[in-house]
Each structure stands twice: as C-alpha cells, then as structure tokens.
Length: 357
Image 1 (tube, rainbow, N blue to C red):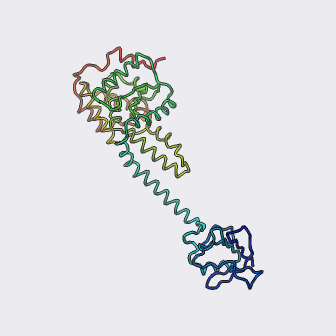
Image 2: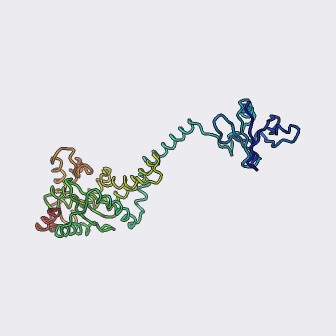
C-alpha cells in the first residue's frame, strides 16, 4: 500500500500521513498516533484537483488554498469516491474527459459555422448601412494595396488617363456618389472592371480591348458605380472578413491575420447576388438615360463576350453573368441617343491605348 502524502498549505513540508474515514476525514501523523490530527476535512468540502497519473489529489474548501492531499492507494481512493459527493463541484479542477472536449469542440464549431452562414450577412448589411464613408475609404485603400500587389502598377499614359477621368466625371454628374469615383486602368488580358469600397474603380485593359464604343464601357462603369452607391463591395468585405476571421478561429488564427487578406481578395473575385446585380443594372440604366445615352451597348458587349474564347475564359461574365432576364431588361430599357457623346473619337482612342508601351 502506497502511503498518502499531505501538504498543509502553510509550509512546503511533505508529510506521510495516515487517514481515518470517520464522520469526517481525519489526516494524522503516523509517528504521533495519540496526538491531534494534522487536519480534519469534511467530505462535502473536498474537491478533486489536477493529479499525476495514478494518483487522486484533493483540496479542501475549508483548508488553506495550497493544502493538498495525494492518494495513490486504490482502496483509499475508492473510499474518497464513495464518501465525497462534491469532488467535481465548484473549486475543483477535475480533468476533462476526451468525450467532453470533443463535444465542446463540436458545439463551438457549430456555433462558428452558424454565425458565419447566417449571422455575418445580416451583421454586414447593418454595418455597411451605417459605416462612415471615411472608414469605407480607409478599408478600400487597404484592399487597393492588395490589388496593386496582384496586378502591378496602373497604366498612366496622360491622354488616356485624362479620357478615363472625363468619362467618370460625366457619369458622376448623374450618379452623385458621396465619394467621387477614382478610376484607373490595370494591364491584364482579362476583360473586366470592378469597384472597391471607397470609390476606387478599376478597368482591366482586356475590357478596353473588347469595348468598341464609349457607351459600352460607360455601361459597365455605370454598373460598377451602382455597386459603390449600394455599398455592395463594403458589405462583401465585412461579411467575408468576418467569416474568414471566424473560420480562422477554428484553425487557430486567433489574431485574424488571414482574414483581411482573404476578404480583400474576395472583393476582386466576388460574384454578387442576383438582387445586387439587378439593382446595379437599374442604376446603370438610370445613369445612361439621364445622360441621353443608350443601354443596348452594354448588353451587346456582354453578349459579344459570351462568344469570345472558351466558356471558362476569365471575363466580366465570371462575376456578372449575362442572364436572359438581364439581357431582356437592357434591351427593353434601351432608348435612342439624345445626349452628346461621352468621349469624342480622339479621346476614345487615347483611352484604348492607355496601356500601350
């Protein structure tokens, strides 16, 4: 039989003790059997604490905080387990079973997934609606640095840049965005354009190559201005950033360092919801109508892209698919041109050549 070991909590002295299981547990010094007990612990005040393998280590809520009793004899351990009904009560540090750990982990994972799937979209919509535009612009600048790291520097031939800014100024006279759009062109074979939170509008040179008229490009840019006006990119950034952070928690990224990167890149490849796309299309139609320009060129551009290269070729259709309803709406809303051209021929050619070396 292995002896019980007792620490009184007042000194570091290690004592070999004898136990008497009476109406309370009596802890005695075997060298002084006729002397008073070293301690008397009520059974209902005893608590299990962290123990080495094969031992049962106990504390007592009525003893000094550091007092410990360690039992290694199976018979004594059985007596304690039989007599002490509150071993794992308040104040205990009982080891948690693997089953409890697994159950708690599953519950935590389920809560995180539910928050990411259901809670983040609602939260993102509410935050996007009330976030100050100065904050949105700062978030957009953070994403902008990622864009430039992916694509490199912007194309900046002076005449082409002037033409692009003139086109966006014309659209802004109608769009009247709280944050004026800030356009730029990136060199890429992909035919696309996208808007960042805060009003930054990027046109990829592949789209300039495919576009045949200023009205075609203006339709695409007006659509992107619709996303800016409705704060779709901001909502997506908040939602995906929060979701990435929650998923990161599941895999140990407690700092959220990966969330900003994942969220920023999601803005570049985001495919908006059908409702978001429809709202941006109607915004574009309103702009083109108010400028006296037709909407059919946007539909013609998108339709032309469907036959340009293999179906999987990257283009604006990847994030803005041309559905039957969308094409029908653009055709139904088309009106003859009554306003002046958005760019003259020379300005349009300057813009088309903005990335020429």
